[in-house]
Image 1 (tube, rainbow, N blue to C red):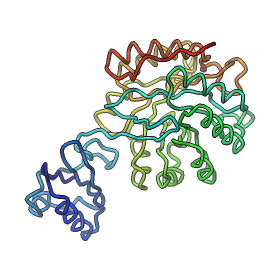
Image 2 (cartoon, helix red, strand yellow):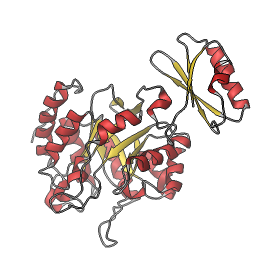
Image 3 (cartoon, rainbow, N blue to C red):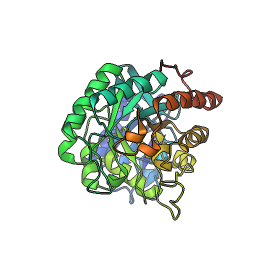
Length: 353
């Protein structure tokens, strides 16, 4: 249930109303919009009479029920307004959201060594990326595949952050590693395989860093939004939703099926920012540029693209990784689409090969 306050409602009155709701055993959450303040009521609201609530104060404009099971993630919870995630990086503040320029995240699937990760960071930054992605801990289908270097890789990511000034996005697989990851990461990633690891979702919901929540390989949109609700309900309002492809009946030509229809669907259902990962979504570097451009045209807020200095020798996901040179040229191509839809910060900057 949400309580929409009138324009110009006094702060003291908003606080008074919130205190009254708290006395009813509800959790009021104040959401400051562009023009109005909305108070979201979380708790047992099924038996509450909206007309009775309306009479509490003359400053209440209307009372609405949130019909979706994901209350905090619902766009209705913010009275139709989009939220944004702000990240402080060494290079300055980066904002991910519907009304901001597209943010590009780039880097290798996993951190292999210092030279590789630092070189990649410098080159993707020069091409226009704002964040470096790289796995320290890697969930793999096979127990015999490369699992990442773990804590030592976090040290290498910290080095790459220091040298490049890029923000860092890396995945948490085990709640026991969360504290170490928080020290290095600017955004904590929850991967597709852990999307419904509810214990982990609660832990990252109490973390101080924004969370990138990837869609599970067989997850419905409602499953995904309910997973986001776990994070939001645990106190962390900074959640980004990342579509990375789902399993369908045909995997002969692509690794997964990249569901670009989620962009308009999510836009109508949730206020949370949206990211598209065409690398995992297709599984082949040749398909990544087309899907990245299509994602911008569809209205994504961010892109995650895998880049490796030598994809043929990558320890994981080489076939879907672009070389730094191809990534640079792709950024130039993306700029054309991004500028056409009014969401590109500036032309990508070329780097010396």
